[in-house]
Length: 342
Picture 1: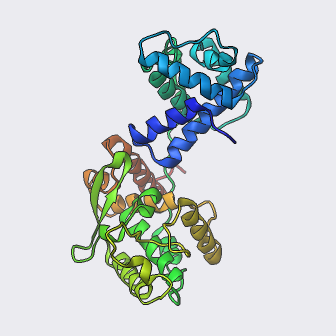
Picture 2 (picture 1 turned 45 degrees about the vertical axis):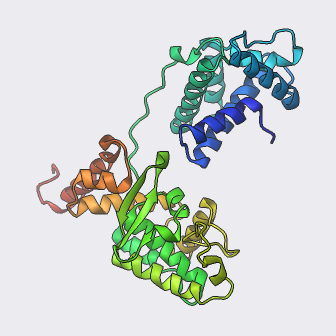
Picture 3 (picture 1 turned 60 degrees about the vertical axis):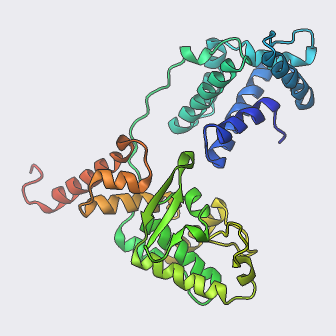
């Protein structure tokens, strides 16, 4: 599917200025495209990407010169004008349409967040008459506790990859690292060999907003990385790719010697979940949740867990305290003879 110029410009803003991850920027771009297609259909307009690109460029040029951005003399700007002239009623009609599609509350909230960010951006750049999102309220979502798995399940999963070849050792090192550090998948695949502090037993991680943090690396994860690295350096297929040529060297390589993708990590995890008979809905993010939950279960303080996870706000981390409290309550109700009314 081709993209519209306004969605391209907005995606660039999210990536370059807001430092959104590529995945989040793509989601926002897809949400915006859906909204624009809805407007085109509602106004019975033809969505011609090439013509819209020319119109958008003209609008930006006029806006930069302080001239009116809406080019009414050009008939193919109709879709762009529909975006510019959108009102709160236009937004409500789109949200009603989304409601009919039975999206989850979380997806609806993200689509509203997309439009909120978009119109704030467009209004500031003279690409919209006003910001209709100021009249739209985001519906409250019910709190959803993060999913965590038990230590026994973690042990079962981490033991699944073999160590007979480079890729098996890589997978074990990868899973050990996710659970040992609680880092996000996007952070994992962004790791370079130079980010590993072997002597200090730590990793330098680049998180959201390009913020760097240092996270400790557990003994098991460090041993798995060393084992993987040793075999990789002795493998003629991969050793030249890890030669120090002054360029960033991905820590976790794919079978072609390039950087792993988030999708590849998910596929590898799915393979091992099936292999050991664990819940197939477990995701790489589940390991992050389990990391935080197990730390708090064993007495770690909330502020330390916040720093390890790279959360900007302590309130984001506090959701894990609800999970550990619930687990304690469940254990109490199950074990104490007078916990339940007869």
